[in-house]
Amino acid sequence: MDAKTLKEEARRAGAELVGIAPAYRWEKWPGTANPRNIQPLCQSVIVLGRSIVRGALRGVEEGTNFGSTYHEYGKSWNERTFLIRTIHQVAHAIEAAGAEAVPLLGGGAGMDTKALAREAGLGSVGKGGFFLTREFGHRQRFGLILTDLVLEGDAPADVDFCDGCDACLKACPLSAMAHSDGGLFSLNTQICGVCQNGKFDGDALSYERLDRIAAACGRACMVALEDRIDNKFHETFRKRSIWTRDLNGRVALHPLATKGGK
Image (cartoon, one colour):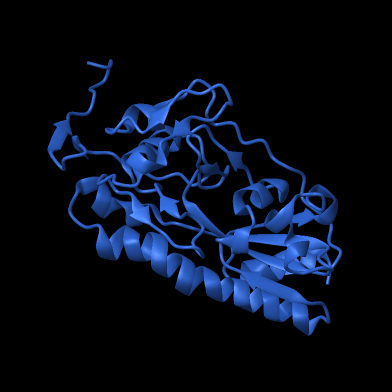
């Protein structure tokens, strides 16, 4: 099985994003970050992604439904029902071709899934800590397959949507984000951990353990990117006043700016 055939199989299995990180890009990574910590003969890491439908964030945006919209269709079912089937099907196809395939959820058993997605050419981490792709911005979840197949890798893609943008930082009602010297905004995870603005908790297997995709910062990022990504819509996402909760749970409404910024 070559890279072209592998990608065709992945698309048939439901992957909307698929990239390959060859061994020479990660083989010197330390400790559990190194795929060979799990599969000693690993030659390629396949990164598979499924998008989060924009409508899954609608209930959080309106402040009306956090459970059956984002929590299930954006997070839990997306990762543990839909994506996991894609990973499983592709792993079976690889093993049917005579190579070994180690399927992993986005938690990556200690590996840095976002770093591997970058090395697989799928995008890069933005200033707010979100992994950004040209196709969907931050609206996707990733899983991994480690294999002893030697596959042609994808060229890293520097997706720089963050130049001159601080929408995620400005949107945080708890001031959990701040400018730093490292290029990325620093995040106070202790404050972020008690956020009531659309943040969800994950676990050791989750692609995002501190899931901010539907939080105030994540939704602001999505709004800022909606004219720049490939997945475009007839209507803009944000239609009403923006709601926020402070650390004490008090709700505030912030009217949308009208044309001209007034």
